[in-house]
Length: 378
Image 1 (cartoon, rainbow, N blue to C red):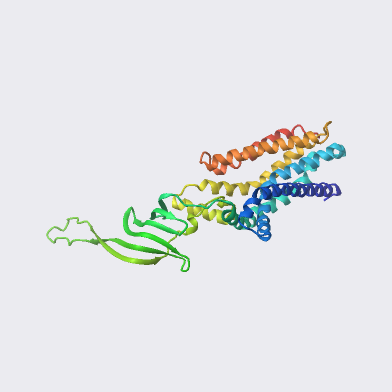
Image 2 (image 1 turned 120 degrees about the horizontal axis):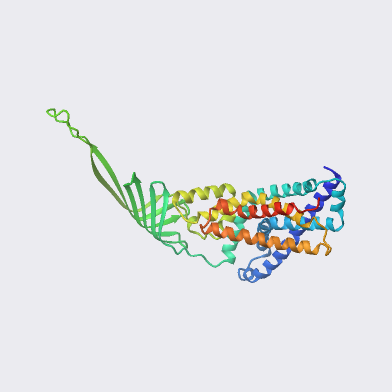
């Protein structure tokens, strides 16, 4: 790496982290001011508040990364252009592509760190952040859904008329198991209660009905040897009843808790597991988790595209100084956020496949960057 590359890379990274630090400081102060009343009502100590913001700051920083790296690229390159350093580099025989190398090296470092943090580190810290917000900042959650149907396996279906998440009790419980569309087992109970010590459900006033098909083949008459005699299924029912019974079900009380930004607290592996579970149960709302998963995978590409566009936007020297170029950078950042939010909403509502919607902002801005690249100074 040449001395010039080291200079650009160092300036670029320092500017990026400085911008992130400034924005995080402003956002944290505003957020603290807004939530101070709630902290006081909850009688929280300084240690608890600091612990919350130690989880909050990395999360906000991860959201700001694509935009801040774009602003950093615009700022660094526009200053170099304003000091005629870009012209000097191009006049010395360096191509514009070669000038992009240190910026892309910086983008690679930030993209790699961001991917690891967003994929595994920050989701784990978000678990405690979300728990804190649900405990002290959000209103108490009540599970209000009625007539709950859950496909717990490919051939097993669960039903509850209602569920109370405060005492972890479900009412009018039914669990049905089928074999080739034929009911073979039905478990019912007036209510089920979670036993936190045994980590099992306790069924009250339960009954278990099993349906077996006993197959008999009548003997073929000797006088009619060619006669075809088919098997006859004679179903038999066996019913058991009791007052109480402990049982292990595939559902857990956590599934009836608030799903407020639950995807923020899931690592990439946990997101895959959650999507598979919801899909196997035929549940709705899978799109939210799919959008989050694919967004994390596309974020490194977003960083590359925004750095590329930022350098292109600011490489030409402006008579008005760096101000207009930085303003243009903020405008393009706003448009990118608008595109990202718009298509994310479409995907979460089921209007577009998540795999496509998360790529559209990158594709659009990638095409714009390629078009702008034709007009940069050579």
